[in-house]
Amino acid sequence: MIDIDSPDCIGCGACESVCPQNCIALKTDNEGFLYPVVDDKKCTDCHQCENICIINNDIAPIEIREAYAVYSKNEKERLRSSSGAVFYELSRKTIDGGGVVFGAAFSDDWSVTHTMCTSLDELHNLQTSKYVQSETSGIFEQVKSELHKEKTVLFCGTPCQCNALSLYLKKSYSNLLLVDFICHGVPSPGVWQKYVHSFGFTDIQKINFRNKSKSWENYCFSVCNNGKEYTQKYIKNPYMRLFLFDLILRKSCYRCKSKIPNKKSDITAADLWGAEKIASELNDHKGLSMVVINSSKGADFFEGILDSCIYKKIDITAALSNNESSYKSVTIPECRNKVIEQIISSDSPDFDKIAKKNATQPLPQRILAVLKSKFNINI
Image (cartoon, rainbow, N blue to C red):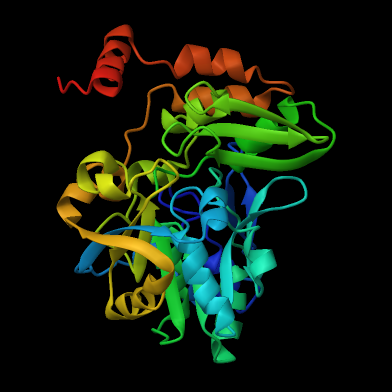
């Protein structure tokens, strides 16, 4: 039987999907994250859940092939996307070829779940970053079903979700493209729901974690309610600050097993931070992606979208050095448990107050940050 209390559990739902007795279900814990719960009376000790669990399996290291700075020639989709619209171009190629795309989308209550799309109109629901752990319960079964229909399937998720799907499928599929992104960590869905409710809005039409109306680098968190848009610079938004200060992440994120090179994805897509040094001629502040090719399948698929993109091959070491989340887990803050408990246990948590107390840089660090950003001084 799986270890339901392990801090390494990523909440992917693979165990629930593989269980022949249907005795495993994902339930929300006291931090707002999903964990498996086992009905001991139904369990027959077949060990299938253990055999495919990411906790019990080592991921063979990949050999990264090459990296690119990329953005889509489609200006509208690029501005709609969080960075350079590479996910859009990969997905468009999949859908145009009769395939399907799986990715994270907002639900009616603004929770985040993985879903399948078969058209470009539906694809818009999957675009833009969503800094909440997405629910994937039952999705792996859908992916397998589409693969067996011999459709091309693009699955986009966190590195651990891609690894978990690969373990669930038990074999490689030539018609499956795994696309992950550089992941800082996944925040609590319970904390996110508390934050959404704190708005006091009754007619939310859109939420965007990465509004680029000012620029790609200085993005805003925005909410459109009853036709009016409210924006706040990401570094001032309390939810984003709690996220960026690592205070509301899943326990497994602090000891992630799916960092480079231990991943199964064919392509890794991310923001090209440090673009001013790596590919300054491509950076017009509208969004620039980094694409890392991890397999021959990924290389072939990526080549198929290049006519729709502006791109430049870049040094992989330099690119990854500006995004340490690609290879290093974040450190768990001492007050992490207290912060999550304070938010989840309150009917009306004061996010501004909690962020101000727990997610503020000390004065010396703030001064260094200003010197680096304003005057390009390296100290």
